Length: 613
Image (cartoon, rainbow, N blue to C red; front, side, top):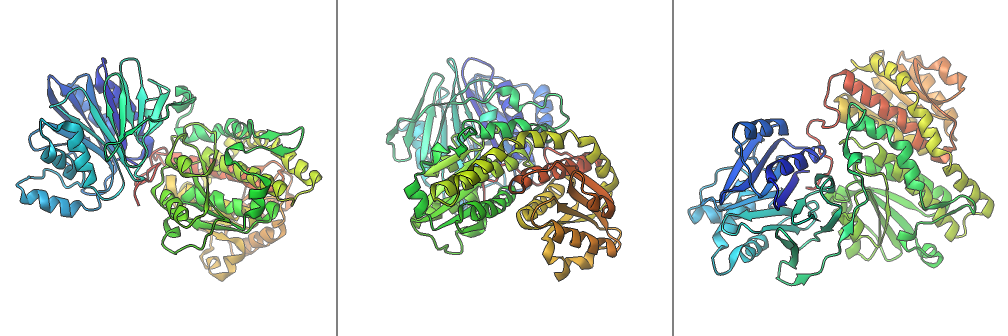
């Protein structure tokens, strides 16, 4: 959630930090601040609200220096305010901290420090950290040892960066647990620190990722990584291939709109290097999967949150239908609390765009303790979910900036389809003819997505008709039931319209009571095995005077006759239809939100990467 940026080098740190924080706005925040070492003293600027307010403050009260740290905060302890914004300064003004995560023993530490005479100037849990560093600092042991002792006092999961005027040649960065990433980038006689890659990508592509329980001593020319017990670590340096331009809006009004339109490319990239269309085979080499391992799998549990969980629901249908393996879908925040039944022949498959979602990482840790095999589908290269897993499928979609996920939803749908085909092949569940047909169908997807995107203006007309509604009901069946959930979530996330989703067969068990002329019903009705059942549901809604919007296959005259509005999609192989049916729903939600004048990329109360429970 919160964003962190740090710099040490020969350039002015202030614009580098501000620009880096700007690139992390998608994570969600309610205040921002920075601390810069200026003339041997720590100077802090903090402001509630958007980064533009912080920039205005700095324009009126300039600050510059060769070393600094910055932060965008999403409140957990203490209201959003300048007083509670990071960075936080020690009592003597010599130490400063920025922090992602929650200090679970905050009250205990605060009482202890207060008893020693420490006066707290904020309501945050973070302030305890900087006072601990001050407590433990001595000229003989230095900043590294003081930081180490302070970090060992903390309970919970954290990403922390510490700076001191006593030792203005270094910055300390640390990661404890799964509170979000800490990335350190190598420049030319300069070093960068961030909570996520886009913040520093324009400056460097050579980075290391801190693991849980590691701290880094970052100087202008290098970095030393240690455990919290002082053991030296030799980290792996990664070269990131993302293009900085990919994090810019370009011709589009919002990142979300850009990312919706990037789906032709992202779906193509998802297939790249993994599909042999000539032989009709799938290659997911990063799973290290053999026929012997595939045949031993007794059950797959997909664990994820939000949009990723909806992708997992589609994956359940795909894997059970194609590979004949039982699949459960478990919301990650519930998984570890129900004592899940897993064994070494169970695969727990985590799906996460950021790879840093706290609940998903906790579910993975629980599965690891119980002996399950761990797989993940993630977008963020080098993220914790990628590193924890025994095997990983990268989404290959590039940075996704908009909080409401779009291309990072359709890509894992294709990943799950490819996984299902590979498992079905290795387990002997598919004939050569079936396998080649399923693989050949993948070649159609980027073009079909493009045809949906070409119809944006048609969808915008429907959005204009629905923009003033207060409630909506989404219905779907079978493999497109999760698309009803995803469509409703998109509408809720960015337009703040109350929307519910139901399996269409459940409509008569309660939701039909809501249907009237003021309740739009959005029905996903492509030509798939559940088509006749969905048409029946649409007829029941119309019989009760409801407004009906259908997602329908080109040429469907029955849908055209019944519906008030139609969101047309091209004919699609039904097992891949969710990749296509969701696109008009993404576009619909986007335009409803923009017509209502809302901040699409940063909807209220939401964050891109949920790194606290």
